[in-house]
Amino acid sequence: MRKLLEPLANAWVGIQTHKLRSVLTIMGIVIGVGAVITLMSIGRGVQEQIISNISSMGSDIVTISPGATSERGVWSAAGSATSLTLEDAEAIAEEVPYVGVVAPYSSSSVQLGVGGNNTNSRVMGVTPAYQDAYNLEVAQGAFLSEYNYQSGSKVAVIGADLADTLFKDIEALGGQIRMGTSIVTVMGVLESEGTSMGFNSTDDAIFIPLSTLQQSLSQQRTSTGDHVVSSIVLTVTESAQTDNVVDDLTELLRDRHRLTAADEDDFTISSMEELLSTVSETTETMTLFLGAIAGIALLVGGIGVMNIMLVSVVERTREIGIRKALGARERDIWGQFLVESAVLSFSGGLIGVAGGWLVSRLISNAGLMGSTITTVVSSDIVALALGVSIGIGLLFGFLPARRAAALKPIEALRHE
Amino acid sequence: MIRLENLTKAYPMGKRELEVLKGINLHIKKGEMVAIMGPSGSGKTTMLNLIGCLDSLTSGSYFLDGREVTNLSRTELAQVRAEKIGFIFQSYNLLPQFSAQANVELGMRYAGGIDSARAQAALERVGLADRAHHKPTELSGGEQQRVAIARALVKNPPLILADEPTGNLDSHTGEEVMTILTDLHNEQHNTLVMITHEADIAEYCQRVIHFKDGLIVREDAS
Image 1 (tube, rainbow over the protein chains, first blue to last red):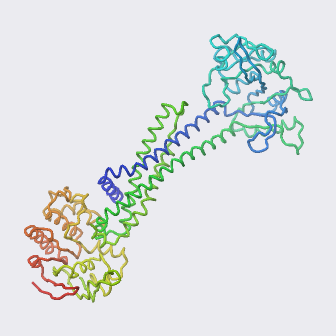
Image 2: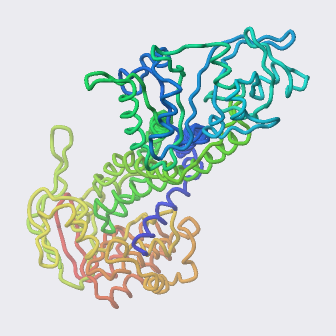
Image 3: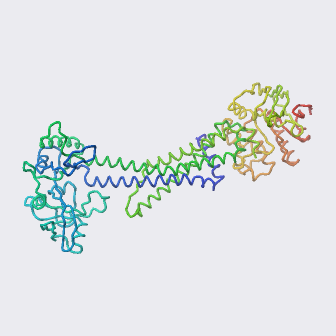
């Protein structure tokens, strides 16, 4: 124990002898480590926020879009093709195991108006199952019912922001909206979701029964008379079965669409889990990138440590001589200076971690550039930053330590 | 203890070489107390450094405690200094950032490890038990030199080398230091080689060797 502590205590005495200089030296490390911690905690915070936003939409959701993928994850013709039908959705609900709710929907661009207020929006024609698929919360009124769907009622459920835009101070519930050439009555207003970083927010959405949409706005049918839909959303009852469900869906749809083995899929199935892993990979890369930029500051700090250690070696030449006269081997001297520079930059690392943590707390509380980010200082970032700061101490202490060890005892002793 | 055979040492001076020691033959037995005297530049400090394994010789051989040390590696030389040799310098050479106690402990640091109790005992032996926690700047010259003596003797090395140990002290303090050094020598029976300019200091020793121009010119027994 003593053998371990003694060099550390020695190093501490050396650092304390020149307090101001030591503080200035570690400033570079403090700033570097602080920047790494702060930037990476922002990166992590953004990452967790995006992931939780996606998860809140339901991580067990599988989306089927028309059109084929040309390359992984790139929809070449998504949305433009008309291969999915209401009847596909019904078949999926009946035939594929582990499928919870199936929610086919269509959407169409229309102009909405209430009194003098007009706005362009995308109308979503949905079935009642849509609410269950996305866990939509209704603030006022109710969501579309099975009856509304069956009878093609001219009713709508709208998002909180859209309600504000159209109705301003008037009560939205029960109000009437001009939608193209028809008029729909608001039967429900959704709970506001708040900012969700632009991910499918329902705050600006308007939902009407799919049957109503098909009657009044888009009456597309396939050559066999099936009703075309823009997309089919479904939930998987057991997440572990997601891959099997995707396989079964593919098989069923290929069969229904009469595709031969040579044909490519005329639809694209994407699960939220897949999206989740892509997004977390991307944000992780971004986090590391931010960390690397801050790492440059750390590097500069390391050069500062080397500079001061070189000065220290010259200043303490006589001490080195005395130690050598007392029998210190080269590796004793070498180790002493290396430990000292490691302790120096490690203390810088500790202060930097504390500072970085403080700054990221401040950002969490005060917000950054108007948006609220909950920064996350995770233990692996802290460990990384501390490890790197010791590493920098050892790396940049190496040259000065070598130089100290190589001094000839007699010359070192004569040094004034 | 020490045997020097035809020892020479030359330093490069521009293109020429400056020969400082021109062939020294010397034999010092175990337990002897030897003084080396001579004018400045006569080569006595150079020889002491060679005996102390702080410097490398140019030609000749040097046997320490029966072992040829002429061709030892730097690490082996450090080992020899740690185990066999205690140095006392004219300018004390204490580390200013450490207390007296820590300075004495430093004497054991590279020779088997620190033993605080022994360091304390050594300080007590030189009469500085109550000054153990003072830093060198808070001590008088005589006290500093006594700390240095404690540092050199704490590991009980067979050979003590002292380069003008009283050179920076007034005659009264010098005598005090010499008394301590002599007493310790009589107790521990180390071999002691000491450079001095003062004849009355040399009188403490059994042998006095006179240097001039890199050669031993005379030897007295006292």
